[in-house]
Image (tube, rainbow, N blue to C red; front, side, top):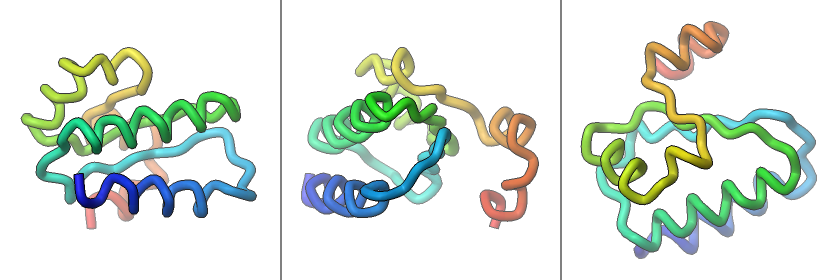
Length: 98
């Protein structure tokens, strides 16, 4: 909850003048996501969908995977295991496995 507002403000700054078709959210370092965090992810994904950006989520731990599925985020985001993601985007192998 304490970081969700910061996350969204930083997210808005990062995408403000950018033009891209795909975005990946890597949750490798995220251990817990509360309802405020889920709301921030939904708000961010909505902003990206409105711009026609395809969103991928990877590196969810077991608990976050359950949270994403229970909250229905799996219906609005493309959730991929790390292996699935690297198979689809091999150019990010070094970045995500570091």
